[in-house]
Length: 143
Image 1 (cartoon, rainbow, N blue to C red):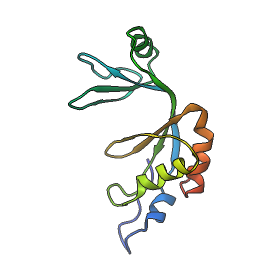
Image 2 (cartoon, rainbow, N blue to C red):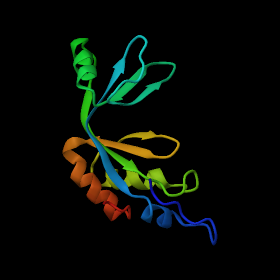
Image 3 (tube, rainbow, N blue to C red):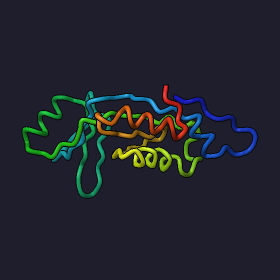
Image 4 (cartoon, helix red, strand yellow):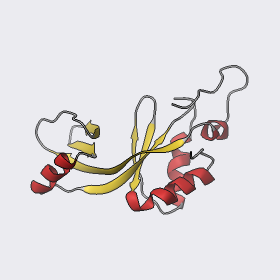
């Protein structure tokens, strides 16, 4: 996890937050597809998103992928997962926009997930290196 910015002193700028929020690849071979019926998270699953219309699975599980394909479900991927380790949660308006704009300007499509502590960019696996270059050029540390 990124080191939080110190609380004392002036409010950090967006550029300060970006500069202290590393972008790390944390997964590869991730796919996204709709599921039907009851589902629970299992080994290899990154997220399951449920709304009033559908349930979307985000996973690297080969078994889940094979099952989705055998049932004729639309499958997107593979994606690489880039975790943005934000140093000032909920205190940096424009943080996600900075990351997604950097990717967009490089011609890279992004599927975005956010948790309480992190933001995740799912980028097409073939675009991983270009996405990291774009994020680095935008000021994110890329270890």
